[in-house]
Image (cartoon, rainbow, N blue to C red):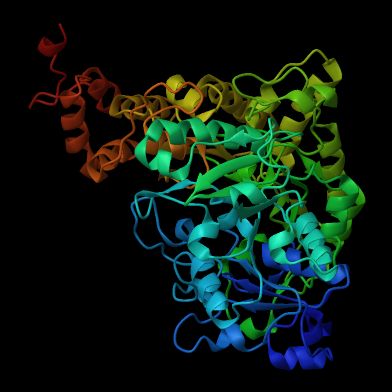
Length: 624
């Protein structure tokens, strides 16, 4: 679809003028977004808006409203017929704004020209307060990643404290967590049928506050009653115990209802919907998106859009269960895959874009190579509570066949106008190295590995071993670093055989719970031996609703309740981070001092070679 052929009414309306162009006097739903409005299936507010539109509802979007002064942006469209919705953005607002060291990021990727002043901190709370003040009788419904991750008592790293369910602080009426297409439509139908928002208690994947006596069916034997917010404030182990239940119920096919007392009321978390079928996820991606930013941003750059505009998301969900990742808390661990036909329709849309030059930046998903993977026997999956299907070992019930994905790659690359399709999403090399009892599946993994390296790498393949210590990796729920070494050998061999000169770029994390300076020093030595000068590195950032964050805050592993020590002070973090950059001359003095302090002088030689005498010859006496 060519940009020049579009009309203003091809986007969902954002102003009174745009409402009038459609002949609308009043929208049914008004969505407030913390992000710029990009009408693309990778942007949550666009997905929800288009979903409601396809079900016959009139939807308007107010992107990045000005929260200062007289709040005119919140009032300009008047009151909706059904409710206000708040989608604070594709990222948690605080992660989007600040680094792990609580410093302002260089830009806000979801704002025009990367500006930092387009959204407040905690936009969900700020927007909801303004709407409740301006329209006290109109329901306010929260959605998006910020609501998903803050639906129960959670640790907030930026304020360094436990916070209540987001409904308490925002004064909103309901949370829709996870991917919200199905619950948002069901909510509209319930309200349209005459129910009041306080009576809507039956919809899966919703969260609400209730008096004990008003909980539907009362507290039942099948419910999981968590430690109260007040108990978690008193006892960090109670918070750790809670989180195990929260994570398990987020990743079950048949989950229990969760209840948590707070301020003498109960937060009620209804179980999620089943994973979306292929037909359902196709329907979401096939909605009439323009795939472009709203015309109001003409001449402005939206960094996040620039990254994904020539990419295709082929599935949702991730069964990796990495302990620092929020994907399962929002999308769940079960994979929902699009059909080949739906994927190709989107590819054809991209090839028609004015600025497309023939290169797809990514054909992937939360993890690039989990497409169409699921349990062989779903009755086993229905009873499973494991948060990861591949840690500590790959489940024997998991179908790891890469052939469906190879068919997608082949079909995409045959499309007219496609010169090359790259895989920019993270690849799980443990799935590629896994050997099942099926020779055809194992051969497909080998074929996929060669296909990936020879045809879909843009010179540098990014993978995420995250650490070299097996103890730390176990806490991260990541495979042994030995698997990365094996995969790198395969990568290098295939490059040699194919006459390619490509690099493998590993990602690593410092200051994760359980990680020590000695672990980081060993990481420096092992990556030096592999001839890496590390670039893709970061400090662990405690984000709400991850097991790593709960471990970091409480000091306990939520599954074993055993103590886990975490680096917390700025000095401890910097002491760990410096080992990433052992090769920089300015870091050597501090690193040598730290290694002497922790009694690991043996690693000095491994990093820097044997110390030199003034003559420039090795000091042999020291090493006798």
